Amino acid sequence: MLNLWPPLLIGAQAAGGDAPWITLLIGGWLLQLAIVWLNDFADRGSDAGQPTWISGGSGVLPRGELRPRQLKAAGMLAAEGYLLCFAWLGALVGKWLLPLLALAGLGLFLAYSFPPLRLNYRGGGEFLQTAGVGLVLPLLALWVSGASAAALPTGDWLFLLLTAFIAAIATTLPDRDEDLRAGKRTLCALLGRGPLLGLLWLASLPLAWFSPFDLLVRLGLPLVLLIALWLDAGRADARRRGLLQGLLLLAWVQACWWGKLWEGIPF
Image (cartoon, rainbow, N blue to C red):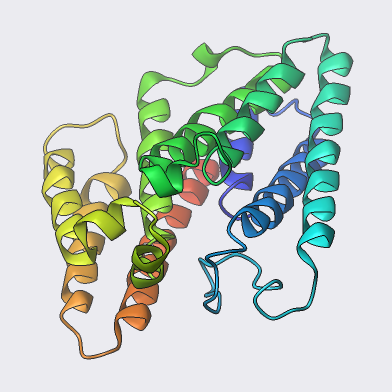
């Protein structure tokens, strides 16, 4: 939920804060459950490792706590609840395209693991996650509040997409070796943790010189990536290093999101 609620809240706040907050957050929570459970079901043949705090799903199938069909049924129920939430909100505000946008968002997330796209195996899954978290979720909240995409400035859309992309990268860092064995073509599996973080660090340097971004984004990201690169040279096992790096990046993302929300609170 920490990766889905803030983009929803940022969109609702930009629209003036008139959104039905409780229903919006319940919809985001149900979407999170659907993503985790259905992706666990889709990866049941390759997910043998223990989950971490930020990756690996719920772990109920490898531990034998549920049968695949039970987890699939739970995921489908959560997905239906999410769609019903936004169908109801669409009827409430008179926006009949809202359920279609919600369905498109669910489709983006599920295409990460399910055929025919299955982009976590074919490559490009991080970009699907970025579009879902950084674009669809804020837009859902804006529409629910009766606003348009223009309620968020261009700089804020870039901010959301950048932070969503870093969050998507962060969750793949602990599982690089497992993903390689499973044949997943994540950016981390293809490039390796060190080279990927190095490329992100180089790409982040121009943010310190120009920007519609806040200081935390401009200067914090290169610093956080530099620390993550330093951790890659540590003696801890690879999975532990990846977990520490992922937690560091996700902490930066959360600080950016909640900092953005804090800025918009009137005092």
